Picture (tube, rainbow, N blue to C red):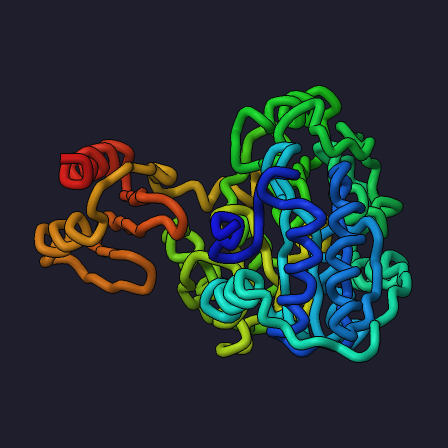
Length: 438
């Protein structure tokens, strides 16, 4: 079972790796580790999510904890419920964008602070493996709570549109329909794949893959929409499409949202270190303080708290807001994008165009036998650049930069290169890949 305990969550194939017996033990181990007495638990639309919920709750209540069942909900809604209800912790049962046979648990302590490998997943795995939980004299209870009305009211407070924008929304047969339910009344929504279906009959629920966005891009052009929004499986990520049907790079979307936030006054905003230079430049040009962050939601959320940041954006399409207990909130990203379109009088494409100023490689993966040795070679070769090791190795020059970082879960190095022009980017990309793959 060790393979199901990941860097940021517990995830595996049902029922071979993750099943009811495993879930019950995880419930016990979670309570033993956290000491939580009141735990919020929600789940996605996969066919096995409800059986896993029952088993997880059985383990939690056996340890004396009270479970507050949210039922079907998005991951951002579970974070909201954790904070709003003053719970000691939360678990959302989902495998996010993974295929239908997968499921998993994203776990938090109080105030939606995530549990990662470094902050508890390894401990929960140990308790799970050893079955070293204490025995409770009294069983806990299971109660139901509908967080949707409060979550919808929370999102509504931020809506500042002055006209009804036409928006194509790709729900991917998943939890985006719950994430955006409270704000859909303000927009003319053209839905794609809204029916809940955990078998994902239309396409994988992963907006990072360009092929999953083909339908929404075509629909945005056909109906002349103001923009498009494509949710992933548990709606903690979202990909946005401009009015021309073009994909908005997820790092550049961070800069777009920053403009709406900073129009209300100076603030600190985090951006993932793989982001275009245009992101930092835009934040600073609009009066914000831009701080680079590591990759990964656990690191970003901790850094947001450390610097009192109000917003953070990640290249993978996670957008984090202080208002949602320093956690993801794609409904809020949707709202703030709409607000900016109305406030600026510009189209989505016009808002993004000035940010498309540099040539980027995108993230390139390479299998390597010894990542540390490769990083050492790169560090020596590019010693004349400004180097830092916030996450892997980053090297900056006047007209180009790169980052190489090891995967948390695979023997891979991930490379991103950006330069002032495409020719320079390609030349540097090939030069670095020769070192990595040589």
